[in-house]
Image (cartoon, rainbow, N blue to C red; front, side, top):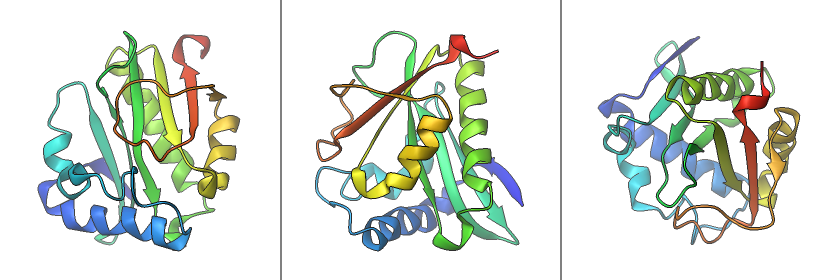
Length: 162
């Protein structure tokens, strides 16, 4: 198992992996990352110096991704945990937790004090994972992700971790 930063050659694989999760869970496609045009060009999106996208692979097969991104309109010191998706066969073995922890550590290294995430009820297993990791639900969205189809918003304060 290898966790590394995104490469340009990952773009199509990651877009397919992300969209497959929406199909698998019958999640809304409009107003979500499914229809977001940046999903097809993640390498380019994550060239932003205050961002990082981690990719998990095994024997050359991409199994998942998770990253940190300074979404427009976020409060000062807050970044978004984004593009957190795994292939079905890669779930349930701790890989998701590893990817999320790598992203949280990256957020700290990049100087962020909070991480925000938005998701959907269809991804209820992930919501439980976020809650166990210390994310708390919010009453309204933060920032301007453009993902108006998401209706679960959560935040994690990094300064409370030791």
